[in-house]
Length: 496
Image (cartoon, rainbow, N blue to C red):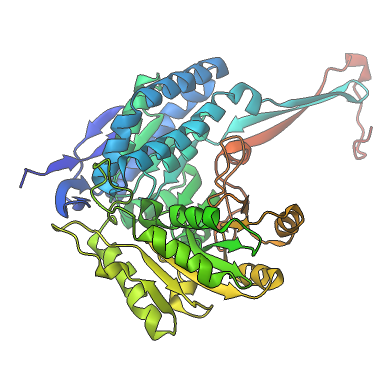
């Protein structure tokens, strides 16, 4: 076994080894521990926050055009290093390289949106609101903000947050997932190469101790978080109680409704792609297929046929369509849901536990579970693995009621050839992101990403226009330049 390397922190433009407390980072395809990652103490985090605070004034004073230049250079560098970043992701997350490269591309969209910061940060002005009085409004950065990102998108989600935060004039402390931290450190290097001054972007690796310090530290003005619903709720409550702005994105249980008039081959292709891509470790993965009317048997047969031809293997192998799960614990968790589905009365059509793999990687085959109903754990819980449940309902109305009854409301899709049905679905459904014949409706960078209900805690969605709202606060200035002869005492309430 090769000697393990150590992954540390990036603070003030310098790499640091970190302290004695470390955690494991694995290569999911082999099951071997490839790195030790330093787990920051509260003191480490406080120092990173102070470095960010020390850099905040100068970065805020940096002209907008120079900030935009840095974003343009960053875009160029990310494009140049897309394959490198993708391979870093694959080595620690496990997803296939092509999928990881797609992740970089989607993160790049937000960098492109951030290059337009001169427009996004534009203020307003009204003259002569009263005699000789003008009012103008400006957007100003918050100061130091913290971004806490998940393991499943170690490039895309950080870029969704830090690009806008930095473009808006803030300085950032990024706490990536300790399971696959290397991509965040490489991003920090590319930001520096793009012209970012030391201290504007800092990366601290760590666990709950690091997160708690970010949530409690009075210098940190805002928290951006993506993770499971229980943790998102806890992060929101703790940070908000400390007076911080919070956007905390939680879990999901995304439904894909297939109407009787849909192209069933297209629907089956979409369901397989959206359910099993990245081994189901996506917050926008389709995890529940809702078959409306009498199409259930036909649709399940088509999906089963496609599943039998999927290639699961090492993400670096171009032949692989799906890689391993990120840890052995994740595999055991997914296995338990498949094992329990039959006991709850569901039918396991394809059992991913039966597929055999060589070596010690964290592989599992894909599972297809039919006759699933609300109340079953396989339906209610976010499994975060390659498991697709099929629920059968007799009508459109019951499909809508099923989706709207879920506590999660991240994404949903409908497959139909009827425009009237699609329009009604868009109107009726209580979910934040909706796809019509699009199984994973992640918006482009010019729109914002976010769900409803237990999928989002806070008022603001992530990236896009709402992100600039989140990372800035408005200041309104009322101005009057009176002639000295006009000065007088007036205790009445000011009027026009």
